[in-house]
Amino acid sequence: MKARLLLDYKIVRSDGAIVQMRVWRLPEATPERPHGLKYSLFYGRGGRRIVGYDNERGKGDHRHYGDREEAYRFRSLAELIADFERDILKEQGDD
Image (tube, rainbow, N blue to C red; front, side, top):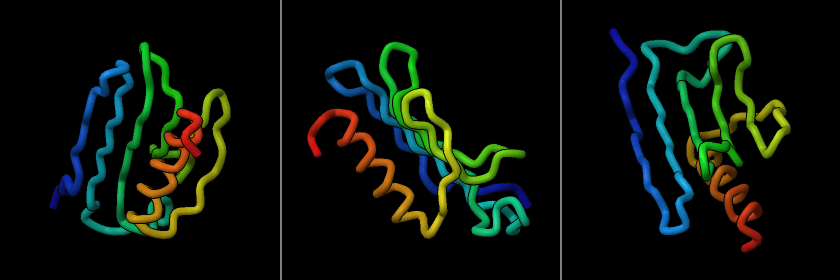
């Protein structure tokens, strides 16, 4: 069985910023992805990532904020998206 795409969202905002979220349900959970999801959330502008969350193989759950990369504690898909959106708002200075 293949991974199943659960969420595929992309928007280009009027200021040129891109918000993209892609989430897949894996056929089974793994030690590296115990929640059974693979995901990539991206916010950027001008070819530069400003905020990102992903769990690429070999790195586990983590986030990118500017030039920093740090571990991320995954709790649920809803919280992942809320954290991502909160970081975008902080970056825009709307917080």
